[in-house]
Length: 134
Image (cartoon, rainbow, N blue to C red; front, top):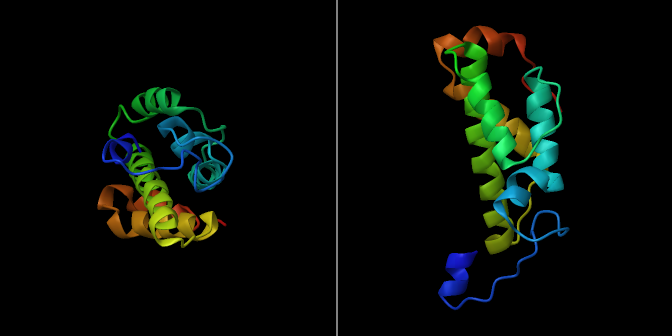
């Protein structure tokens, strides 16, 4: 948003996804109700039972969880990357095109992408997980 403002564009600071707070990295990816619903669904899908934390806490947790080269660690890394990407994409789509996709559909899209991008290393764990947990 700062870059757009430097270009002289008027930018509303309100989060376009939830309309409840200002757009910050912390809010957009971890505090926004839209992002929280995605995270909750995707973490539960992987058998991870914990509330979503903030940016720094999530990075520390991810570093600890993904130190070893396990299938679960690879799956978690793919989930983090896809979730960040899709939240950003959804924000831009809603902002620039006034189109909205529900978090349920986005969570299914993320799970499909993870299945499609999986490797032999992650196939075993993916076969045990539900394709559409929502």
